[in-house]
Image (cartoon, rainbow, N blue to C red):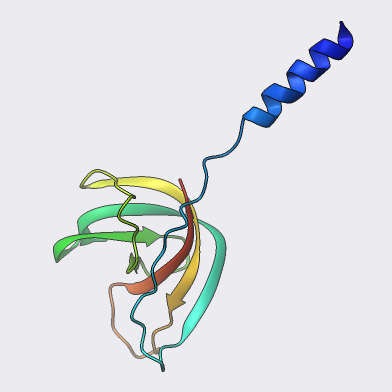
Length: 118
């Protein structure tokens, strides 16, 4: 009886898994002289909004906000990924972030995602 209970417990544990990451990312159009920084498995908040940190933009955009970084507009959001307008969701992500010159005045930078988990 113990062996059967153990086998059932193992099967249940194996059937529970985290949500699969999204893997259909296209490349962004970074120029050849664009400096980038690679981020891996960072926690952040994915937003879909017409404003970035309260500053209005012309259309709805996806951007990720994480501590210590400018908001990062996502330049390669997969078509299959949809969240409601004016909403946000916690994510774990990886990607290449555009590094801006110290003298650049900007409300955001861009990120080319390589991994995204909700």
